[in-house]
Length: 96
Image 1 (tube, rainbow, N blue to C red):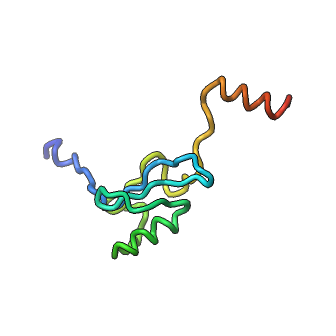
Image 2: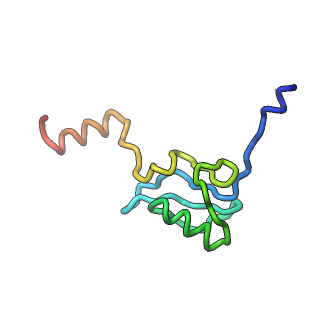
Image 3: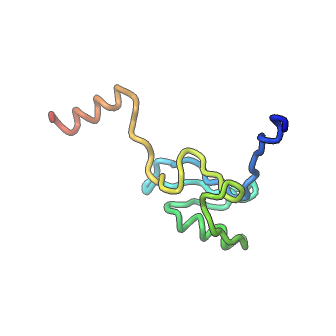
């Protein structure tokens, strides 16, 4: 077999983008490349799919759902990794 036999690229219908730090945090949901809504939890992704007539039996199926910037359990933004921000946060909370 050649290498090309292993170069399978899924083209999922649903794409869930990374977490946006809103109040509350949310993720943009795309269907067939079009933005169709926001999700604040996994149930929201399933509702968007159902409204489009898609039944999702497995949210981990890469042929149907692509998770960008996290997986189905990622619904909060990552903590700041900038040392200056971390120092500012430590000052605002006081000494440990």
